[in-house]
Length: 161
Image 1: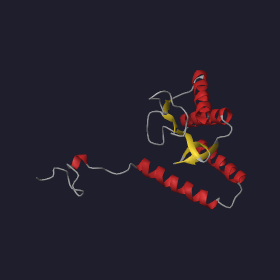
Image 2 (image 1 turned 90 degrees about the horizontal axis):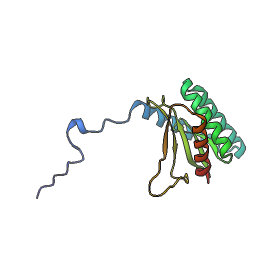
Image 3 (image 1 turned 30 degrees about the vertical axis):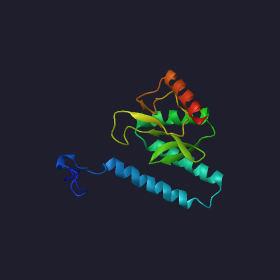
Image 4 (image 1 turned 120 degrees about the vertical axis):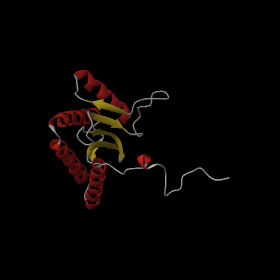
């Protein structure tokens, strides 16, 4: 009996084949590689120096964002830092992220980064947001109201445990 599975060299019709990473995805991967190089270069530094440099990197990246994204990122950064002061800032694929025990807990992604219509606040599986069998792990952001900020603060506090 002949197999109907396509060979590795021909995975299907031309219009179904993988086109590769987008320019934005390639740029994010390059930024991540640069972040890793910086981390290696800082290996001899003290923990406080590394954290201070990472914080400066995050603030500089936020300052470079277009105004709408920058306003959101600044608010998210302030909320994270006040709601969970134990979380550490770092760049993750060129975007602000916040870690606990060295693992990314949550991150901000600007709308401009991947040419989307909204920014987002995402949480990793390290975040303790479990609520039954299903719960959201990312939130779209276009603006922040006082109620939104309270909700985000509660999510950050819960995620950080």
